[in-house]
Length: 581
Image (cartoon, rainbow, N blue to C red; front, top):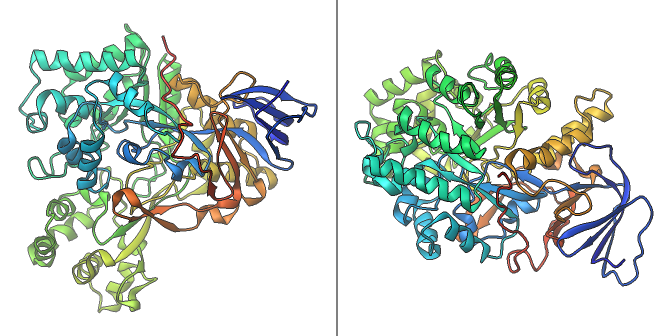
């Protein structure tokens, strides 16, 4: 038997959680054809890779990205591929570009996902030839895709397309019967075409960009129970996925979205919610995440939390960070796009009183801990403040309130003031618990969004490092086989896509990992320009020694820090249609 590629002597993981073993793997075309304990005949094989001492695992899956814009102009999606991600899901958080036009897409994505609005508009204007989900898939398949793509249909997308953005974001407006029917038709058509499900949103600090509807929440948040029930009923019948984000300040919203998974007197609904996290602002919340999932699934539901399995560290330039949207004074500043107007507001004493009041309010559900003593300045034209927290700066300035210290520096230096804080997942023991919990899915990287704020492209490698380190320390919490399964086959099987496994007959999407380089380089800060966005400097991850090779569709696309010439020029990935029938 002849092969296009042979990978020799690596520790092979099948993605199903089976015991790993030293194996020789033969690839032909886009498939794995042989996994053998015995050496393979290398005669005529053009590519032979020695993998002794390394792990050969299925390509990892990122279940929560916002690559919907980037994929249109830079379909290689190199920042994910270089870390062993070979399949990404689009259409998260109720946002997709299947039905809306360019300007509406700019308003929906720009502020919520911190992708420059004008670049969103330009990308959609230049690329859009489609009018339906089926045509959208066809358009993607004409691109030189790097990784495989699967997709959710965004509720805000179809709501905006049918109602118009203004009507879709008014509390008093309900969709007409015809508009409701059109949304249901759009969802059905997308599922027929192969979308894995629909995403919805009720989180109230995701705000719209632009001028017409600026600072209103996403269209999906305005949907009432009847609209949601009718769309969910389609997902139930088709056994497809609802991805959703509840309003964390509303017990009713959380209860409605979690309980929607149950199949009492109806078909159950595959539901994945945002998100399971050990939040600094609400440290007790992490204790109930697992029990909620366990109870729902015991009662017949099919429920999973999404979880980022690394500390949720964020950076900000000035006040430009989504966490400020969750309270009134922060949202008021972000509402003002004009920097002069914003600075005038932040210097106003009555505004500062409001901000201090919001900051000092310590009760209620929230995401940000609102502690400027836990916010370190990493760069600033004023060198004297670098390495200090805003709280420390306030103390050094005669006991100035932390809010005033922060606002003074923002007014003085604008976006040249850069700082960081960790919002959640800061306690290792809870990261371990969530990472091993079967009611939790690993993902939620937000890849392709928040370009200046976060970089979790290598979350899978960081999770494997934690598992490997625990094993070597004699305190294992998960086997390596199960850890690989959690990042690959478990996700592929739940979402119903052809990915995540590495057995004869499976797609030849795989990663060769050098465990000797699963080290501190995974945590290092790095930036890289995004040509598509006028070379905006994006936060990225750089740990080139950890990934020796990435194959997608049987083709070598990346390794040792360097992209292969075919990545982004030839189509290696494809659109993965749902296999659920």
